[in-house]
Length: 146
Length: 125
Ligand code: HEM
Image (cartoon, rainbow over all chains, first blue to last red; front, side, top):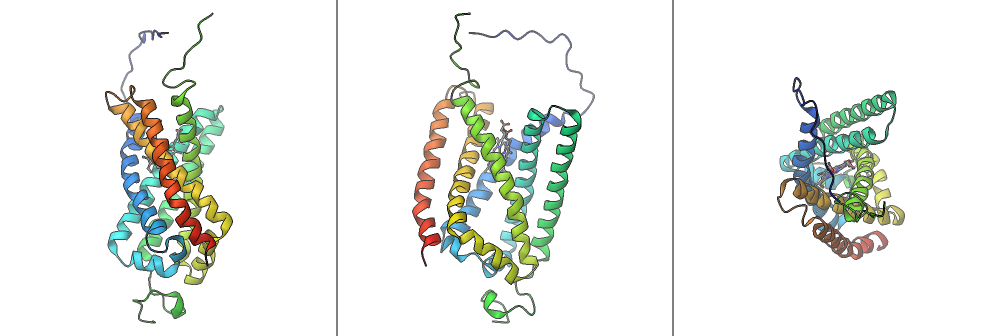
């Protein structure tokens, strides 16, 4: 059963940047990067060592004392949130019939995305692995309070 | 009207169901990510606040849910590679259904390998 697609009667005029195409491309560029970032994240945090059992404040401190994991988690934060939000936008476009509803949902999605990117970025870069006044048994072994 | 469509790349068969799964897993992971950025932000509040909340990830119910989360991420990520292959690889459409079953197989094997290890930690002392 073959389908004949009619020749478009009016060719696409290109006055504006093709944002929909850039979005489409972004999903395909960020995807493989997220595979590396997220799969490593899962192996390091849930498989190696004691996995979920070992995760606490000191574990996070041990990772973020190293600029390598700061940059890793930063890249993961930005890419995953933008990829996820753009994917949700596609789904909203598919199902939200009314223009008003679609606008409201899309605006909310990007607002939440921006807020969480801002929050997460601040957390990664203002994080103190050895906060003063915290009880020593909750801190990483390299903290002076130990 | 006697023609019965045999399914196309996108309708009825593997092409459609992989899309449904990709969409559901994407939404699920998205909402988890919202929560996960917030719970991680608690490291900025205090070690106590973070530890109390992260303990809930080690309870039996959440521990079991994590298997589903890991499976959803694996499926979505690997199927995402399949989608990209269909779009950019000249043989992509020819092998899309084979690639789907490879995605399912790798996901199932990885989750099967992870499950005993993870559950021992969640249910062990
Ligand atoms: C692990 C690596 C990942 C890969 C390789 C990947 C790949 C992809 C690709 C290629 C698409 C576009 C599908 C299409 O246009 O038909 C997509 C859609 C989507 N992704 Fe991902 N993704 C990954 C991680 C994530 C994460 C972490 C989230 C959530 C935060 C997410 C949420 C979504 C959503 C909601 C969609 C839209 C689904 C739809 O339109 O049906 N993805 N993904």
